[in-house]
Amino acid sequence: MQIVFAWSLCLSVVVVLISIIPLTFGRIKAGYSVENMSAPRALFDELPAFGKRAVWCHQNCWESISLHAPACLLCLITLTDSNIAITAAWVHPLLRFLYIGAYIFNIPTARGLTWASGIFTTLLLYKEGLTQLI
Image (tube, rainbow, N blue to C red; front, side):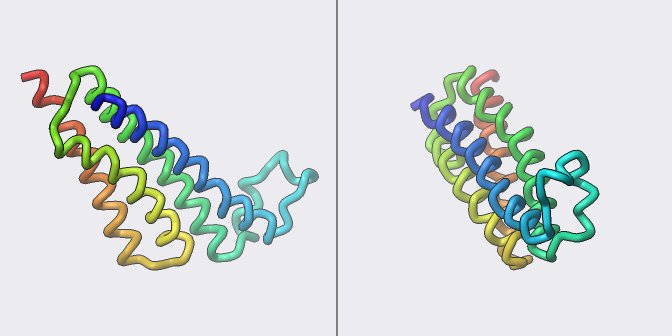
């Protein structure tokens, strides 16, 4: 079952990459072009509301993967095989994908719930992986 943690890690990275799509649409809508590639962050004030949320969402996706990746690796290294860890590993990328939609479409309650649930799944992976060390 160790492959589940590898898949969770890979799918979570794919979710981070998917978060680039709405960010790109926001930049295009604000007039992003080859000419202003030297300072893409200077365009932030010109972004539409969804584009600003896309920037924040993308940044949060990077923060999330920086927490989730070590949890998956811990479970891989410790040969974790609990049903809790396996479920958490599968659910995390799904929650993060839903988080992108909730953030971009400005649904604060769904965004908060998917964010908190995603963090919870990562914490579960740490807990289950560390339990194997004791």
